[in-house]
Image (cartoon, rainbow, N blue to C red; front, side, top):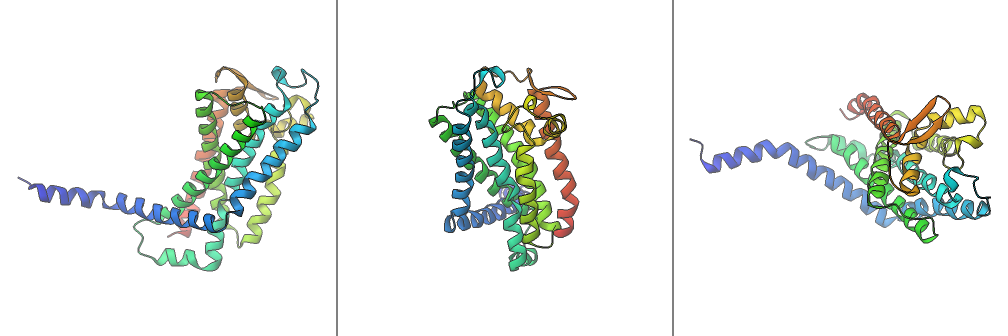
Length: 284
């Protein structure tokens, strides 16, 4: 018969790798947040930029005639979903920069030779940090939009907003981390971020509905992952939540709320599977 002491020792030994992974991930995540506290300009700029977009564009189209947008929605409320998604997207797209700077300054090499139980903690820490930062920035934009009179989603709507943002952030965090290991330096990564940021925003339904766009741009917007995140969030603000309803009348057919979330899930899983071999090779 196994003694209680031996059973406890066996249990601790079995849980050892998981406990070590959690401790390593928390330590690396804490380091990233300490860097943010010492240089809070990243957080402030991440909130100010979309806030300026929300205020300026909302004021610019505040006198738009009734019926111009689907469902008689005001432009400020229409724009709010796009700005929320743009905030989370921009934060996720910058996820690779801390890893890239760690590479260039040699800290990543120190981590790779350290006796870590699992080097996956390096990636997990970045994902947790960027996800927390992006959600914090998005919630700040949502609160500001509510103060400007653009509304606030109900309980179920808020759950949908947070779930949609998580999928979007996970997807583009994976892409950014992959680029951080694939590109030679931070100049190239920043160039990719600048090139991808605004075109993806304008080629989506963040600023205008598909019906306002020329055919070629409508096709691009209907294939843009940002669009599949914007429409469920816009529906969460519009009123009673019905994910079975048609949210996107795309050139290739109609897409429901469930369809939008399914596309986001597929994109997220696909990007993680795509970068996994690269991460395994670089962290080996």
